[in-house]
Image 1 (tube, helix red, strand yellow):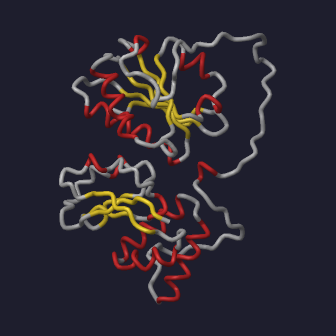
Image 2 (cartoon, helix red, strand yellow):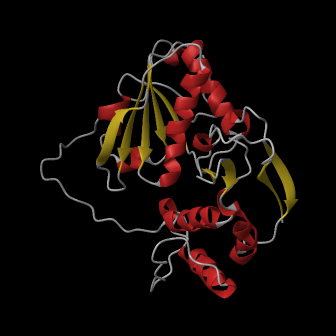
Image 3 (cartoon, rainbow, N blue to C red):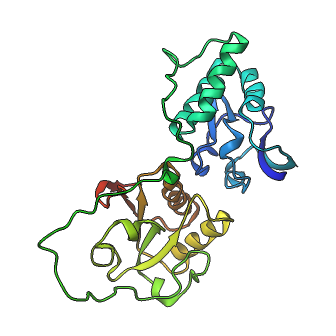
Amino acid sequence: MLRKIVKIDESKCDGCGDCVPSCAEGALQIIDGRARLISDLFCDGLGACLGHCPQEAITIEEREAEPYDERQVMDYIIRGGANVIKAHLKHLKDHNELEYLNTAVSYLEEKGIENPLNGGLEKPAEVKCGCPGAQTLQLDVVQNENEETGMRSSQLRQWPVQLHLVSPRAPYFQNADLVLTADCVPFAYADFHKDYLKGKGLAIACPKLDSNKQIYLEKLVSMIDDSRIKSIKVLIMQVPCCSGLANLAQQSVDSAVRKIPINFVVFGINGNVLEEGRLN
């Protein structure tokens, strides 16, 4: 099929690394002093990294692409040497793409190329495919005997809430504290309204599935400079793809004239708080 994908001109790239944090999918890494596309599989072709390359070494090309074939990808990967191979294998492992990982390891064995990951990789008895954030899980619900009864009032004070739809100059953002939350957080954390939403402006987004993230960046910069929001609190899930929302918040403050604090909270899929702190 015809699809868009990132292309890096290695003759222009100076290895500054500015593009890496802007890739929510983790497809870009600096290896041997150059930016590398570790795997076509995780490049969405939306170009979130384009505006972060001072050398203009990153472009988007449109080309015919067969359904993902790990062996074809490995034909390209091995040309980059041991460090690129290692980064690619680790990338597959971190995203739980174990079927592709097994194919890559078998490819190296067939070609007589040493596996650069120390000790090799054990092939799993059960193959689980997909990003960790999309893995199917059934959770046990913990019943709390001390839970309050009755209907709690909603703390939502605006509409719309999706970042593509909100106006960055809306009155509810004026001099407000902004909660920038991943879509899944309010479903995982039971006390979202009480603990995080009350008295705040709200914008929700999905760093993995949403398109045209450049618009997100522009809106956040406008909230900071035009609506003069006082702070941003980023709420994300523990899955790797969610970190892109924190990167987006940091980029917005870096791009804005005003500098405001960014705090973050990471939630587990069971609704527990795993980590919180300051981003800048």
